Length: 187
Image (tube, rainbow, N blue to C red):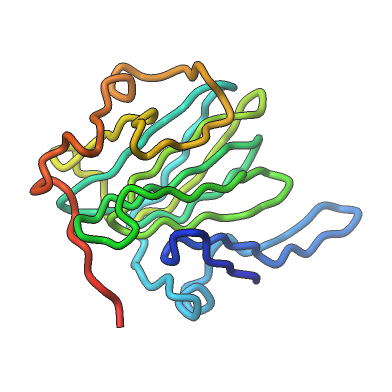
């Protein structure tokens, strides 16, 4: 397994070891001890699947309290996956990191607690899976605007298909800081 830091040190890009032959392939999508060696120590308590058509953009989502860490990967198709640091007083507050995840590259994206998450589908359709370190808590849900000009994510599409909730996301600088997670320096 290869693990690389992104431009946001806590957000990790993971390339699992894949064993393939003429019959197909096998790889572990998660193994507690191996992932813990790379700093992914959260206890996963919920698994989610998301199916979307090309051009759909979901996010940028987070919840606070009950922040969720996420281990994201694609079972079918291809997505542009994004993490945004929204932790108050973080040295990387408002910065983003992204990766293309697909059923071909089998990469995984680890997004720790305190980061907003979003993705857009760049293939005909995509089936995305992710593990969460906390259960869904609707009362703590926050949606940051996918097109927040201060964050300035370089999305690969100009006119995404959005849910009403995502279309009404808030500009990060306009969100009450008391609603956002705090930054805890590690080490």
